[in-house]
Each structure stands twice: as C-alpha cells, then as structure tokens.
Image 1 (cartoon, rainbow, N blue to C red):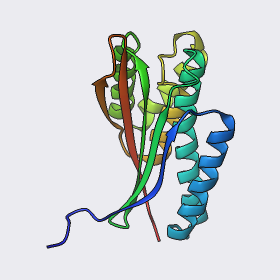
Image 2 (image 1 turned 45 degrees about the horizontal axis):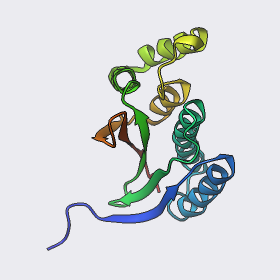
Image 3 (image 1 turned 120 degrees about the vertical axis):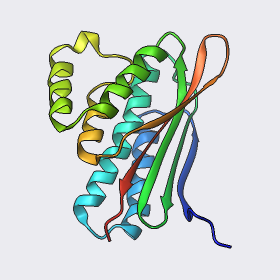
Image 4 (image 1 turned 180 degrees about the vertical axis):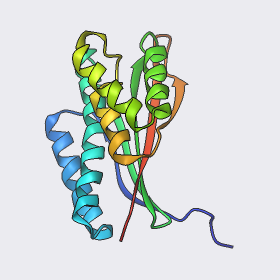
Length: 171
C-alpha cells in the first residue's frame, strides 16, 4: 500500500543561525529547488520565502541574545506538488501570546487586510510583535498559504515553536 503523502527530504539543518549559515542554507535550497522548479519566478518565490522565515528566527534570536540556540530547518517535497518549509526555534513564553495572535491575524487576512497590516507595521515599527513583522506578512501575500504552528514547553521560561508553510511547485 502506498503512503497518502509521498515526501522527499530536500534539506535538514539543526544548529545556531547567523548570517553565514543563513546564506549557506539559502544556497542549498536554491540548488535543491532548481531540480524541481522550472519556472524562474517560482524559484525566486521559494528562495524568498525560505530566506524570510530564516531571517525571522535569526532576528528574533539576535534581539533576545539567543545566538547559541539551535534552529531546526527542514524542507520536504510533498507529492511532487509543494515544498513544505518548517522552522523550529526557541521563543520566550512571555512573547508567545503576541506571536500567536499576530500569526493568526496574518492567517485570517485577505489581500486587502494584509496590505493594511503591512502598511501599519511599517508605520508602527515600535509595536511589532516578536516574530510577526513584515517578513511573515509578505510571505503570506506572495504565497497564499497560511501558517501552521506548534508549541511545546522547553523549560520554565521558553517554548519550542515550529512554524510551517508551503510553496506550490508548478512544473
């Protein structure tokens, strides 16, 4: 019997994230994606989405002095139809409610609502919630897929947060 979902692991990384690592991971992604995507626009979109999600984790870690914390990144080709991007990182429990509310707002937004949220975020940079800035809004606008997320307790002050989205593969 065949699996309902046929998945192929394209990339898997676990470790600290800095600018150099981010650049190398995006390069690896481009290499892998070029095998499956013939449309140059889709290649660029996939790279952009991946880089934005990595940047989101990297910037959060920088702002919270968590540079040594590992990030888990995986990309899977699912049913040769879409690439699933999953990034797991540490989030302080005090930041979690605002982050989850922001992601839900992004998920619920239609095109017009996302444009307004984007403009509001640009104007009110001092009120940006942790991990829910311009990058996540732009990814949703370009991608159309909603985010899914999971939380697990890491310790008394932190959660392990996993954020997932997908990118269509148009061959």
